[in-house]
Length: 389
Image (cartoon, rainbow, N blue to C red; front, side):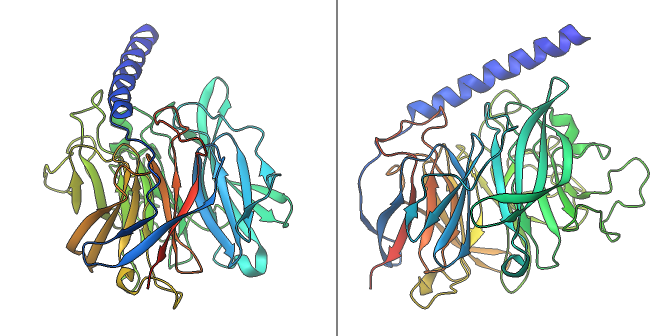
């Protein structure tokens, strides 16, 4: 049995590598376009904020002038007043950075301004296995302290380990987990792979989670049947949870089928029973589906908190695309998709995180040094879209 498992795993990795190789050939030149406009004519310019990063994964702002960025090899970097500090805020020593894993998700506690708590998700190795954990730290300004494990032992693999973190309007911590290339785990309720998890801020389990009292089910589970979600945010006004999810890569199903989903309590999002636009009783089909694959790697609503920002972007959902090399803007009316458009297509290569800054600009990161892109001389970068009045 062990030999058979190794054979299946090797075959999966070879097919995955072939699929990813095709995406590399599709990469365009990292052009230096500095201006653009939306379909409706909203003008913007593109500015480089910092450069010379190594596979940035998550961006958060701790103040109007201070940004934190995770780099996949294990560093938490600080950008203060637009300048990258030479020394990391922290280097997480036990990060396992192979494949798609490493240091990934980063989010702030809802009361960060008072308690200075932040949360990191990263892959590590234990007992010969690759796993993921979420850890809470206190941000002391020049270092991280008071380490507390929130959850760990989440099975991982070289692929489908991506873990996005976000606090919801209910004050609970939501964690997306990949299927670790074992797609059957997404439907198994005794596994926390291929799921959205919901936890209290200290890692304990909320008593109102949907499967707390279900025998054989992990009580952390909020929703299930997900392959590898790497974007999560809550829609202003409705508090609906929107997620982006990577579809099959060839070795585990026909290519394409990337998704945007509205993820709700106890619902089953179908993987691997259904994918692309397929339907099945008791399972949720995506709000949006993308074939060919765009590889959605983030997800964030633009709230329009700054008067200097984009008035036309308020309430829009944005996400970066790796293979698709663009930012997708989705205009919504609640759950209804009004329109969508591509921004910066094939201009800056692979794009991962997209977030609104305190200044109203739309910040995004490139991921061209991840082994699948063709990096420009100054990649990877944090860039931003700034309104042109």
